[in-house]
Length: 101
Image (cartoon, rainbow, N blue to C red; front, side, top):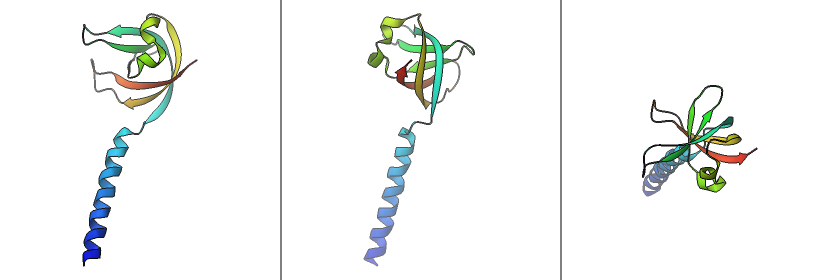
């Protein structure tokens, strides 16, 4: 009986760990061509890339890695991973940039 309890607890722990890990996994890769902007009011500013065709905004989670604050209002081609889907106006999709082409 002790073996079954141990097996049950181990299975539940693995399910819990895998459920948490699924939230951290990137959902998909995208290639974007857009313009870099800084939005929001200080101290709550954030960097976005506005896609040129659809005018959809993507909040960049790692702008310091590519020095995007220095590239405001420049057009860039980026490869990124969508980390969080857009919720609605004011809550854009969040991306992590992999590379700038």
